[in-house]
Length: 218
Image (cartoon, rainbow, N blue to C red; front, side, top):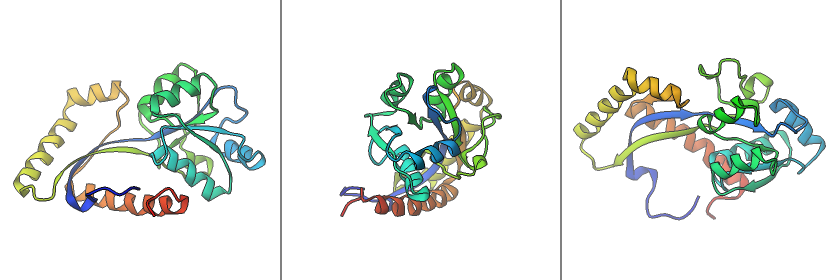
């Protein structure tokens, strides 16, 4: 999105560590209870829904841009300077809608401080089996936040293999998985080859979206 002295070609992905779905969340006082109802409301009330995002260009921002472009709607998107401030603003009713990650959203949804309009993922999460995905409401929008381990491109293959296998063991460790479950961390290991394939797919999707929104480098 901006001019930097490196590209993705300067790095080799070692592994994907987790994939955190975003939860489309709304203040309890809003008149819509699903993503479909929210989209219908936005069509009738252009710009009326105040959307809080971490910042311009973040995955939550791009998810709302994709909703606008796909369904011909308009939000009032307000950058909050981070996921934490966005969550606080949503709880306080200063914004109407936000899309925190599963880790950020789970405690405030469980407590009833905000309500879920749908999980922005392709399938339901086993930790919240009753929470429908946006796709189940007929709005197939995704907005995962994923973490990867990467190394410089000149890293010896044996080092990459060692790191790949070590992280695989850690992410499959029973004790680690129990802790991850308590924290609602969605462990989603991919090896180096699969991680690269996934990143290539994501890059194509986001590059197109970024160009359409006009926020990318000229």
